[in-house]
Length: 147
Image (tube, rainbow, N blue to C red; front, top):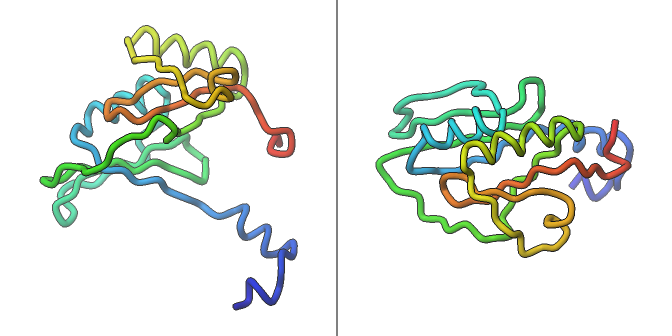
């Protein structure tokens, strides 16, 4: 195991930091999810696929970022249950962007919910997406993560 032999050298750390990731989730209503994460939250559809082995879906993100969300539908209904502490947290880059995001959620009658974790109640606003999963918008930044 090279990882164990090398320890956390800068070269390995750099590889971990530049890693890309995708969060994939199955849904029952792809159009409502696209509307929520696109028009209301502000993500863009980066790509899509139709009837790939019985699945159709989209990839959504902020263009230029190293992550994306994948949402899929198929003839098989999802068997998952959102938990109140399962969160996708999006950080606005400014107070103005935060206010604009909040306004879009409120104008579109998206359900605001109280998070069980008091940290998110103090440092963000929590909403439910069409599948009942929670999304937090915040402007709080961890100092060592600010570029």
